[in-house]
Length: 138
Image 1 (cartoon, rainbow, N blue to C red):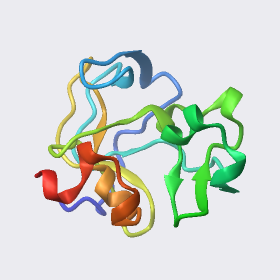
Image 2: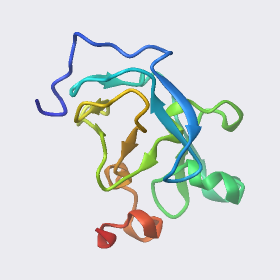
Image 3: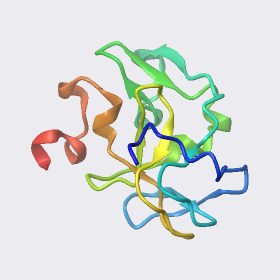
Image 4: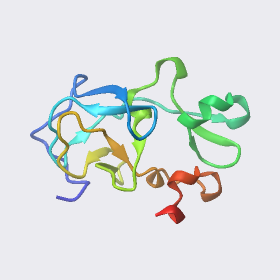
């Protein structure tokens, strides 16, 4: 099944994911039940906001997606971030972003497994990428 073919039989709910300590980096998002390949996850109903990077405290920039040198997409509110902002990076991800901007499981995910995405899919400018996910590091 291609990532843009959604599994219509299984739906995530607000109880499908939980935050927890990650072996990869800080806090991560973990599945609370098995998630079959092709299942759309996260609602996509949040509205990231565009902000000037100079207006964001340095410690908060790691939760933003850079658009260019001056702008990035940020959570609607940093004090109430959607769980999706905590998904960690991996060169061997288990979720992907479809052309329609949906997050979909690209393999079967086990209960307790960390949800991971390749940050390169976020299309940030190469010179603004953190060293740990630059394509040259593959």
